[in-house]
Structure formats: C-alpha cells, structure tokens
Length: 619
Image 1 (spheres, one colour):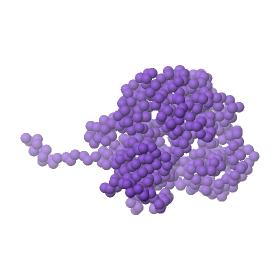
Image 2: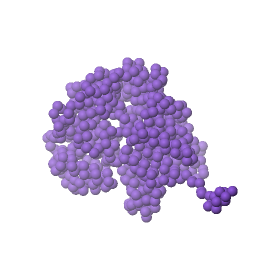
Image 3: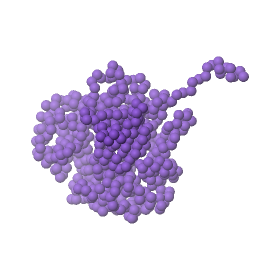
Image 4: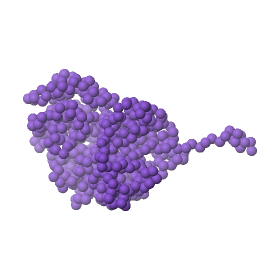
C-alpha cells in the first residue's frame, strides 16, 4: 500500500494544527437509520431522512443493474449531514484554510470506516445545485466497484463513477448516464482533442500536474464508458460486462479490449463519431418504489454520543489533533461511551502509546462486546501474535474468531489467521484464509501477494508467479515492487510466463539497502531509521513531508493507522537512498518500503524414540 495513493486525501485532511474549535459546543445531533445507511445531522429530521433516502435510491440502482454485486462494505459508512457552511467548516477546516473549493459533498474512504459529508444548505434544491449529490455518488460508486473487482483500469474506474455519479431520480423514471446539467464535461470534450484509445487505456493515474489534462481525462473516461454502455452495437452494456469478466480473470487489458469490442481503429472511429453527436442519450430505468422515509428510525443523540461520533470522524479522516478534545469530552460526560474509548485508543496507538491504547480498547470492548475494531487492536497489541506456545496460539485464534463473530467480513482477521496457520505449517488452511481475505477486499494488492507467498511456500511456484505477475502488471510504486520481490523469488524455469512484468525504473543516482529495522526516531519532519543488512547497521535520514513511503497491506498497523515512527521495529525495509555527505549516516532515503514477510514455521517438538517411551513406562 503506497502512501502516495492517498496524497489527494492527505492534502485535504492532514492540516492538523489549525486554530479551529471543534463541535464540542454544539447541541446534540440527530441520528436517522434507513435499511442500509446511518445519517447524523444537526439539521431537521426531514432533511436527515431525505439524505438517507437518496443513498437508498442509489444503492437500489446497483442492486437492480448488478444483482450479483456485494453492496455492503466491511467498513461501515457514516453519513454526516451538516446543516450549513459554518458546521461544514468545523468538520473540514482545511478547505477554508486553503484555495481548495468548498465542498457541497464529500466521500472519504477508509479501511475501517467510511464517511460521506452532505451539506444540507447546498443540496436542498435543484436550483442550488442541479447535480447536488454527484461528488458523493461518484465516490460511493468507487467504493462499490472496489468491493467487487480485483482491479479496474483507471479510465474505467473513473468512467463508471462519473457515469453513475450523475444519476437522476424522477417520479417514474431513473436516468443513468445523462451528462451533468452544468455541461462541464461536454465543454471539456469540445475544447480539446481526445487521446488515442490505445494511449488512453494505458494511463495509470487520473491526475496530472496540468488541471486541464486531469479534467480531460475524467471527461474522456465518462464519454468512453458512455459509448461502451449505450453506444451503437454495445448491447446496452453487455459487451462491457464481458470486458469486466476478461480483465478479472487476468487477461491483459488491451487484448481483452480488442477481443471484446474489436480492433482499436474500428472502436476509435466509432467513438469519434459518437463524440460528434449533438446530444448524449441516457439509460432509462423504472424508478424503484419510493422508500417510505417516514418509517426510518430517528432519535436525538446525547451530547456525549454526538461528541463521540464527531471525534471518530476526525480520527478516521486523519484530523487526529481535532479528534482528541471531543473524544475526551465525551468520556467526561459519559464514561460508558464505548465509541469514544475506541477513538481514544486509536489516537494513542498512532502516537505509539500502546499501553494507553490497550486500556482504551479494553474499556470499549468491556462496555460493548460488539466493538470488533477494539477487540482486534487489543488482541494484536497483546503478546499472543508473537507467542510460539500451543496454548497461546489457540487463544490467539480464539480471539480472532471472536472478531469474526461480530464482523464475519473483516478481512484483516482472516489475514492474521492465514499467517497463524503458516507458522503452524498448515498451509492448506492458511491458503483458505488468504483467499477469504481476497474475497472480502479484492482491491487490496497485498492480499493477492499474501496468497502468492503461501502458494510458493506450499510448492506451487507457477500459481505464485501468476499472482505476482497480476499485481506487478497492474499496480505501481511500492505495490509493484513488493510483487516483483515475489516474482523474483520464483525460479525462472517454474514461472507461469517467461515474460517479466514491467520493472519500475530506479534512478541511477539511488542505491538500495535492505534489512530488518533496528530503531526508528522521529523529530518532525525528520525520521532517522537504522536497519541491519548482512550484520551491518545502516542509518538513513528521511523527510516525512517528501519522498515516498509504502507498506504491505497485511501489516496490521497499516490500514487506517500507519505511521513509520511506531510499530515498525523488527519489520523488513527496502530503502532507496542517496549517499550522504554527512559521514554519520549512510544516506538520505528517498523511497522506503515496509514489508510484511510470512512467519517462519514454528518448530514442533521431536517425538522421543519409541524404546525410550517403553523404558519410561516400564519403570
């Protein structure tokens, strides 16, 4: 998992030292629960119900269009509906502290929790914002796609999010694929020539340093998805579904594209003609039965519950300094608020205060046994994951099963079970657990690498190299590097293919070191890291505000908590660096990858010779 994947989110959410008051002084918020969503708002009850209804309608579109899709993420979604700009500013102060546009809606992805923010005064009327839910719907679509596909090319990931993001609901009909009513996409397509399809399909990122290029990429992604869904001869998306299936089974994208839609030249001609049309059509579906939002459960939260929810939002969106005060206030007001204790535990964990974190997580579980995140963190911070005794391993497995009793789709628990079985030499069960983790979070490249590592240890090098090739050919940065490690560990004669995946080009100015981390110290913005390579200590300096950090998806402290300053001693690291003029250190690190290797097999006690047993029994 490369941290640079989250640069856009971190840019928006990492401004932690702002002089901004929290929401602790606010009156209690209201909670609305619909069949599949939970909304909290400081607006009216009817406004909260309307927001919940809009999400239910969008979910129904996917339920009807893709009946086999999983629609409910293991990471629960909380929708916050602030009533006005001042409240939204308190939730997301960084937007008002910069030139960033002020959001009417926002969707924030996380491993443990997801959040949507819907500003009521900006979405209350078509006149205010015709496509008022577009940003939220766009990101919600991403979350559903990543829940159901191992990998999607960037253009299709963004194209589908744009295509469904502007869905319009009317009394009798629902329109999908209609262009946005502010016609920005159409203007962008008219203003610049589109990229040739073969080049466009190969692009790996949606953003560039040129805002116009970024806008053009989103517009062309929308237009191409529109054409491949509703264009002539596309069978109302049936061909696109066939393309989906091909790339999920591992077929290279360009081959799958031409096998499904025809030669690039033919598709290019059809697409160009489609772009020159005067209007774009929309898919029309009968609107689902109107959700009876009056039947939704609604109640006023207490002050402590409100502060606890807001604190969890701050913590879950990397605004940790803003999270501390409302979490502490919640506990002072009501010491039995389990969620506040969990948030305080999370904040302590991120600061490396493990003893304090264990205390808060333990309190959360004591107050509410369904707090599976607290139970998981408490278990992972205990000696159990590192013990080699049979009794402790059995207890560790039992605690992980308690987590899964509460949330049967919590992939990190299956990852830890897989590693536990590896250590016990039970590779069959380890592989089964890794496969389940892949199923529940298919877009995590590290889970596919974990499966490949187990396959290799189990004596299946061909399948292991296929897993490595799949990731290395589709992901980039640290994920790609980690996959290449697996690929290179398979003997050439035993690989599924003789063709090596594309290798990340490393600057000739950089050197590479690899070893176990012995110490880490941080004094913002500098981290000092010492590793042991072939018995020799090597020390590196790293600027936490620059460069690139990456970590294995299977590191339990990764997910929503990763910080290189804590919980990394004993982990293997790959460091790319420039030699330092300062002879007291080895170099200045530019790129650091934190790896999570499979555990070594725990030695089993050798059985005593049969005659010794007999002799002992005879005495």
